[in-house]
Structures are given as structure tokens and as C-alpha cells.
Length: 452
Ligand SMILES: Cc1ncc(COP(=O)(O)O)c(C=O)c1O
Image 1 (cartoon, rainbow, N blue to C red):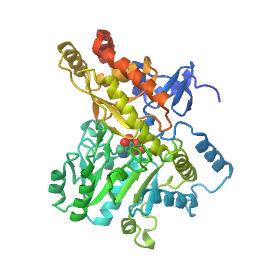
Image 2 (cartoon, rainbow, N blue to C red):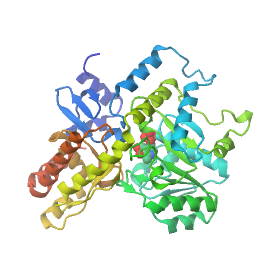
Image 3 (cartoon, rainbow, N blue to C red):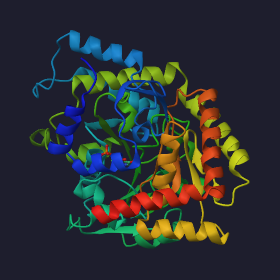
């Protein structure tokens, strides 16, 4: 297969999402990639970009890991049963066993699906069936996915406006607030409390050490299931197989997706306690009461097994812990002198660079001018500069435009991290000293707003 032609890109704009193409063009980020390996993305013109986004934590094992690619090739070559819908998919059993063993904490059953949102939807249904309650609690700032059920567990109207009505009986409470949690749990109307151990899109907000443990105790007390959304934090991203393991907490349900299949095949997995699973598949007549056509498919299961091999053999959890701590220390050392730098929250290799409004008048006015055009503008300019000038791919957090997400593949080496720190310092320095950092994008944005 040859390189992707411009004509093919035009087909995308014509028949898929023209606004996405416009946005990438506007940001100067519409690059055609030819080859992606580990942390490196090679564009058609030979430029090398470093990936510090990892497809929103999909590429924990790096792009196109050769071991996972080979496992998939072998799976295709064996011409085995795929999605017959009337056999026992053995690979699913093998993957479920390994996932449950790694998760521990009495999670012994797995429902497979094809995305994080679908996993959250399953967790909603399973928790309702198991508790015979219908209320659902979640945290402010959460991101659980964009299907209607998952979206009902998010409070940022940007994502839900125009798509309602959402599920009834859901309630947002502040993250890390046990008083608010208990106040709601006391009503005994909630089937489940959904929470991310690290709220990635809210700005890499890490749960306080006692929060999840105490949340588990309170949930047990009031008969509500604790559902951990580990779609981003799972699969060694934070240094442990599950972020839950940092907090010594045993959730009733864990949702995994993203990195589970090495970034190559869509997959999700909902791990849970046996009695929850049995409440759904309670008798023979209900053997297929909750299913999904692509779940348990051979390619996804094979990729999942190979991904676990890589995570274990390359010790990527330990690496994430070690490199994550080093990265945050280096960023703090390099950026601490700048007024708009507010810190680097994070756990393992899921980190953020947090910015704050400056007190210096000229900077403050510039930031306000960006905000008047679009709340995301400051972040997008930062992302654009890192990409265009420093050749580093990043994004801002989806629900917090003042935090730059910093999540390289876990196979990143120290040189790659140092390159990122130096690049971030150059851009942040420019932000504090160069008027062009602020004036040029303002001109572009005003033009774009006027013609949209
Ligand atoms: C924490 C979390 N949960 C759920 C989802 C939804 O996953 P998907 O996009 O695979 O449906 C995401 C996606 O970014 C996520 O970050």
C-alpha cells in the first residue's frame, strides 16, 4: 500500500467529518503519518513527532509493538472461529482469567465489549440488576464516554447539549468529597458510584489516599456498588496494573478499555464480582441477555493477551512509576520559575502540566483575549506550538483547558522525556516573554471565527 493521497483525505472531509479536518488545518496539525513505532510518529515528509498523547492512553505498549502485531498476524493466519456467535470463544476465557488474576480483589468475572463507553453502559446495567436500584452517582468533572448512558454520568454540558434527555436518577458530587458522597449514599437509592481513580479529563486530578478506601467502606455500608472507571488509568498507565492498587481499594466493578489491545483492535472489559455477574445471567433463559456482536472476538482477545505479555515482560508498570516521578520532577525544575505554571499533577505516566491565570497585567489581558474567543483557545495554542515547532503531539484535558495532558507510551525512554521537558520549557518561556505567542493566534482565530 502506498502513502495516503490528498484525494483520500478529501474523501474523509466529504463523507466523514469536515469540521475535524478544518480544525486540524487551522491548528497546522493536519499531518499525514506514514509509520508509527513506539513513541515515534513519522510523517510523509520525514518529520519525526514524539507522541505524548498516546491516543488518550491507548498506546501504553507503544505504537505497533512488534510482538502484538505478530500475535495478530498469527491469529489471522490460523483461520480460526471468529464471531460465530454460537461457540465458546476460548481466548476470551484465557484473557478474562489473566485480567481477573491481575486485578485481584474478588473480581472473578468479565464482560467483554468494544469500547470504554460500552463498558460503562454495561456497568450501569449490571449494577442496576444486582442492586435493584436505579440511581447512579458520579463525580463532577468526570469523563465516562459519549453514549447516552455514559454521558448521563458527566456534568460538562458541552458533551450533552442537544442530545438529551439523559438517564434520569443520576447525580454529580464533588470529587474527593466524602461528606457529599455519604449524604447521597444515605438515601439508599443509588445502584452504583462511578469514579475514576485519577480524573484524567478533569485535569489529572488524583484521588486523595483515603478517598477511595473510605468511598468503598461507605458504598458497602449503604448497599451501593463501587465502579472504578479505569479506562485511562488501567493497564499499568499509573504504575500499577490498576490505579485501584495504589489505594488499596477493592471495587465491585472495574471498567477497562483503551490500552487493553495494544492500540490495534477496539476492546473493552468489565471485571466484576461473581454475584453481580450472576444477577444478570441468573438462569438459562438469560444466558445471552446482555451481549454485543463484536465482544470476545478473536483478534481483540489475542491482542489483549499479547498486550498483557508485553506489559509483564517489559515491566512497564514499574517503568511508568519510575519515569513518571522523574518526568514530574524535571518539569517542576524546568517550569517552576514561570508565573503561569501551577504544577504537575499525576500518577505513573499519567501527568499534567497545569497553568494558572497570571498576575502580570499584559499576560492576564492576553489570556482574557484568548478566553473571549474560545475557552479552549489558550490550550490549543500551546498544543499547536508544541506540535508545529517542537514536533511533540499532546492535547489539553477534555474538561479542563488549563491542564496539558502528558501521557507518553510507557515504553518511552529518558531521552524522549528529556526532549519533551526541554520543548515544554521553550514553549512556556515564549508564552511568558514573546508577544507573538499571543498576537499571531489571535489574528488567525478572529479570521476563523469570522468565516465559520
Ligand atoms: C475515563 C474514561 N472512561 C470512558 C471513556 C470512553 O471510552 P471510549 O472512547 O472507548 O468509549 C473514556 C474515553 O476517553 C475515558 O477517558
